[in-house]
Image 1 (cartoon, rainbow, N blue to C red):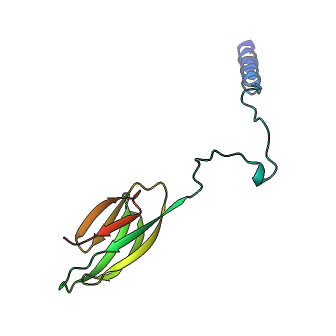
Image 2: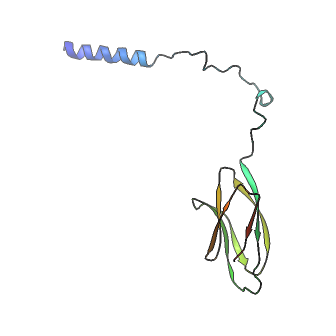
Image 3: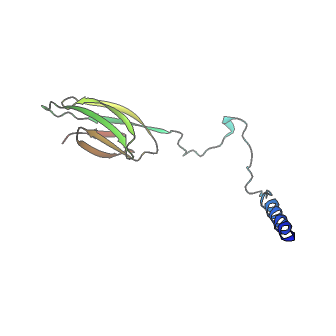
Length: 126
């Protein structure tokens, strides 16, 4: 019985010490903002969570195919898709999440990968 009481006392002591907050003045915030205007942010900080990209689909003269034009992330998330005639040009403005680095554009079986940091993507079937 003494052994159980001793172990219980040690367990309570360890829990009491482990749950005690240690106040470190270096970790405390300098001041708390009370409204949005008081928040100080570096001038280089980008607030955008999306990027605009223009997708230029270049037509292939004489090509009668109609297929799905699809834009996906590297992981396969569909960003945009529609039926597209191969012989017709189109310009599409896409809003993509800012953290995407690559985009896959496909038309039928033709798949190309593009850098999403560019503001324009030129897709042709050649």
